[in-house]
Structures are given as structure tokens and as C-alpha cells.
Length: 517
Ligand code: FAD
Image (tube, rainbow, N blue to C red; front, side, top):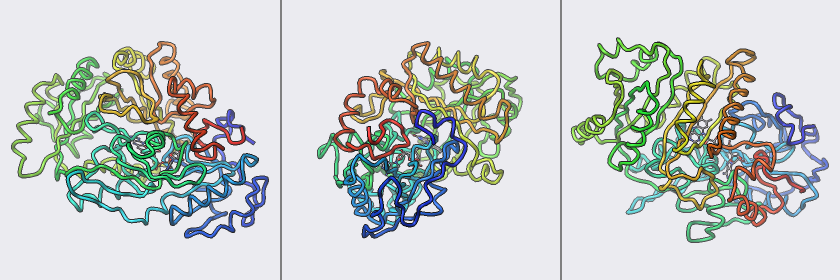
């Protein structure tokens, strides 16, 4: 069987769990699990879905899946496993929407907790001066959005895609084009309810059990299972002006991005992406965006150059449309994009936030959603972003990319550094996301092996050039690498692990700590 260091080698097939259900009686000595009296239930068969994720490269079958109906189900199950002690290798992975990339929500021969079955718990919205929503950790962000909009309210900080769970994104950070202004999602939470690795149910916040609160935020599922979160809200706009412009020069592009995030009075959302060797792109945009100058836009040709697209959004309500248009024009006049490439669109706030779902539907229809996704996400300090762009976009990827490459800066001063999230040590950092899809069974440029080799070259470059980069949604094989990732935060991380999950029961798919060690 696979030992953790060799998981990569065994990654493309399912690893069978012991075939002992329903009374599984393996070396894991969990004979009595089914004797627990729960509101929900365990399933011991047909659990293959729990051995899959969006990355579609790692497949570890659990021995059982818990479908909790209450927090009590989770706490009594974990308490039970904790009491069995370190003699057993049995581990527990909370599974949100299973949109991990390298098996992080899987538990080989262990127990997966299907957090979405907690979703049935109501989303409670509180208006008032500091509005908030109380939501289950297994709730999808799309549902949180729908419910809060009914009250004219909305969470402030998002991910680009909303079919992810609250507990899943809070275990990383939750970064999108609003993070420059509001910080990531982990900075927009007032309170959590957490079940620790000992089975205790603890309510925590910045004032109450603060150590656990900050440990869990960005904590890669290592310290507890988030069963409830209190999310900060603001009044929701009705509409969004959505704008794309192009640059052929990285310096002007990044300078403008940095200019925009420095000013509070600019856009509500700022992202950007790299376009490598794509022709006909502007024609594709015409279905959803209008060129400001249709004639000149139709004459624009990329000539095979690498282009940089700055993407911005301004929120507004219809009665304020004129003011919004004036503001937009003023801010755009401060930028140095290629004038013929100004594209504009107006969509509802819901449509804007849920934009990736449209791509998902198209890709699903073509059978291209459930392919391997060897994604690489990096945080690069501003001082090194030019070196990075030159080497990566100009050399390593100068021919093509296999999916979107996002790149945008955020102000770290808006981020709370007490959380477990690790970032480069500078005030402005760039998120660079290589969101590759591999063509199934291709051995060419669009094949998995080639993309993994490219990712490796990018990581090697970051290391040898001492960029001070950090992986976002990090993935490593050895504890040495994890130590290096956490740097000065490692000791605290380790100390919190011994305090809240001393037997290393939780989130084994992150491969940071091993149970029984
Ligand atoms: P899962 O994959 O189910 O779990 C992730 C990890 O968290 C696992 O280790 C799991 O054990 C743990 N976990 C799950 N639920 C809980 C819980 N309740 N308590 C404690 N631990 C838990 N990220 C961004 O920041 N910004 C983006 O814009 C963005 N866009 C994305 C778009 C797509 C299409 C995809 C697939 C991913 C994207 N991500 C983005 C990454 C995403 O935030 C993570 O993959 C996240 O983990 C997905 O949530 P999930 O509910 O599927 O979590």
C-alpha cells in the first residue's frame, strides 16, 4: 500500500478499503462505531465519491462516511475515535464540497464526514448595525448568497466560484477580487463553532478562545471541524459594472493594478489574468461584453503576444447609475491600458458572483469538468513579481497555458496575521493561480505529465531565485517541506496541533502530521 511519501506514485487509481462493512472489524478496531446513537448515520458502502475531488488525481477510499445531522453526531464520533487512542491509525477528514486538488478532504481507510449533510440547518441572517449570518460549516457559499440577498445583504469577501463550502474555504483563506479591500474570507468571520480533535464543541472568536479561532482560520483543517460560522455582511448592491481592458506590457499592467488597490475609492473588485498565445479572444468576449469602441476593437490583434487583462467591477444600484458611470470613467482615465481594448458589461450582482458557474456548465456539457486539475497557486511578494513574470510568462510558459492564469495584487495590511494562513512577508502580495486542466490520456503539451513538469519548473524557479513565494492551497509530501512553508509560524502551528488534535486524527489528506507518531 502507499506510504504518504509515495502517494504521488499511486495517485491514479482507487486504493481499496478493507472489505469488511457493515461490521468493520479491521485493524482499525472500530468495531463499536455503529453502536453510537446518532441523529444521522454512517454509510459503509458506495463511498467512492468520497475518494474523489476536483483535482481528480488522488483517490483514497475511506472505510466509512458519516452523514451528520447535528454537531453532536460529529463530536460524539470524534470523541469515540479519540478514546480508542493513538494505537489505531484511524483518521477523520471533513469533506466540504470535495473541491480539493490533491486528496486533502480524503481519509485513506478512515472516516470521511460529509459536511454537506449539515446543510439542512437553517441559515440565520441578522440585520442591524453589524449584520451577520450564522451558517453551517457544510453550507455552500451560493446558498449563503441566495439567503442573505433576501435581506438585501451579502458577505463581503468571496471566492471566484461559489459551489464551495464555508468550512472548506475558511480552512484555506478564500481569496478573490474583493480581498484587496476586505481581506480574504477568513478576515470576515466573527465567530466559529468548532469540534476539536478530542471531540469537544467549542465556540470561539477574536475575544473568546481566540487561540483556537485564529488556529482554525486558514488552518488546513488541522485543529477542528468548523460546524458553524458567523459571517460578516454588508448591504448588497443590485448591479455590477464589469470591465476588462488589455495590456501588452506587464509593467503597465501591474502598475495600474497596484494603483487601483491603493485607492479606497476605486473599484469593488480587482483581478487580472494572463493571456498566452490566444487568437480570437476578443471575439469570444463579445457574447458577454461590449467593446467601448467596436471598430477599433475589431481591428485589434494580439499577434501572438502575451497579453495581460485587468478585470474590474464596480457595484451599484440602478438609481445611482449616473454617479457610478462618472466614477468609473474617472478611475479608468487614470489607467494606461490599450485604448481599443476597453470592454464593458452590466450584470446583476448574483450573475457576477456566480460567473464561474456558467463556465462550469459549458465544460460539463463537453465532458471537460471532471478531468485532472493540476492547479498551482502561489503568493508572490510585490518586490519580486517582475522577475517572476519575466521568467514564468516569458520563458517557462512562453508557448501556451492549459487554463486561466490569474494574477492580482492584494493589500496585506487588511489581512489579520494572527490566522494560520502563511503569506510572503511584504505589504503587497500577488496571487498567481495556474488553473490548468489536463486533457485526459494526452501525453502532449496539454497532458498531465507536461503540466506537472511545468509546475515543478515554476516552483524550482521560485526557490532558486529566492522569491520568498508561498504556496496558497499548499501541497507538500514531507514534514520538512511543511516546516519550511510555515517558517516562523511552524512552532505555533505544531503547538496548536498538540493542544487541539493531539492524536493527529483530523485532515490526514493534508499530510502534515501522521497519526500514531
Ligand atoms: P474540501 O475540498 O471538501 O475540503 C478542503 C479541506 O478543508 C480538507 O482538508 C478538508 O478536510 C477541510 N475541511 C472541509 N470542510 C471543513 C470544515 N467544515 N471544517 C474544517 N475543515 C474542513 N479558493 C480561493 O481562495 N479563491 C477562489 O477563487 C477559488 N476558486 C476555486 C474555484 C474552483 C473551481 C475550485 C475547484 C476551487 C477554488 N478555490 C478557490 C479553492 C477552494 O477554496 C478550496 O479547494 C476549498 O477547499 C474548496 O472547498 P470545499 O468545500 O470543496 O473543501
